[in-house]
Image (cartoon, rainbow, N blue to C red; front, side, top):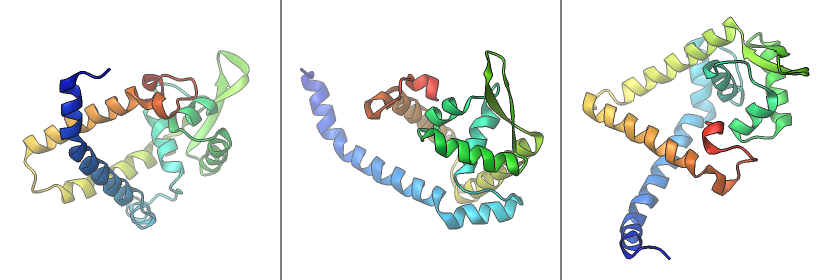
Length: 174
């Protein structure tokens, strides 16, 4: 049974949660629009479909090559989707397959130097857009926004199993 103070806080905070959900939906829409993606690709000089960008970013941030199944789990997509995207990225020269040292039958994927350069170019364009959009914000406000966003994402990941985690813990999928 919930504590009375927790129930009261939940009732008071429900309006904030509604506002937060709306704000996140607006941000997600702005960041994932086809036009925004196409503009970013032109500005950074990279040709890549929208579905490949998060996959390549994940690989670029990884400490070591990753298996396709792990990529699918972390991106919360089906394995065939990842296989198709990897094939496209491989054909474009952004990733390469390497032997899995733990299983000779399996392969892992890692970004090539070209893939790392592409990710950095895409990030720089997006960061520039953010810098321009938030130019009037104080340094302290930007710091607080970053801290709170990381805290929110960590909380979402900690509760990700509620919507299905395919056997991985939230931290493993991060």
